[in-house]
Length: 158
Image (cartoon, rainbow, N blue to C red):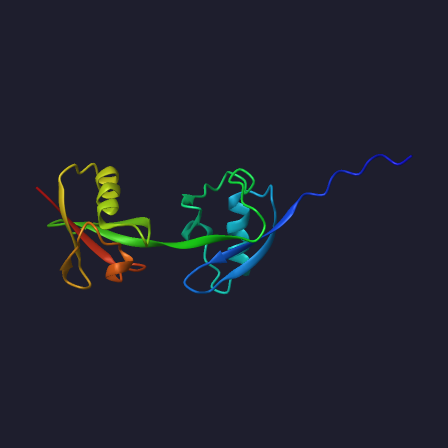
């Protein structure tokens, strides 16, 4: 009698939605999120690097080292792809920029939190979009302002 064959890993199809350009991928259910991101990088028309991808399913951001099974993602589920952008950040009056990798859909208030944490600046009062010459409202997102890859933002402190 032949030894029992190991059970084939379950394959699922996931739909990736990004700015109206949906794609579908066959992947093992026990694959890590990072493996799905690699597939997206290798097979998606724009070849988006892994570090520039954020994946969201059912309101939860997916962590690279967890599996699709960990998130109970079923076959034919839709996962949203959100691009991360390199954002140049300046402190008002200081001519040195820092590059932050941030999700393009975050709010201005969230960006302030990130800058506070990154720079240790507890008293950030305002952010300024250098390209559009406008102060940013905390309740709007970076994408609402058209802030994209390599945009420049200046922060002001008390």
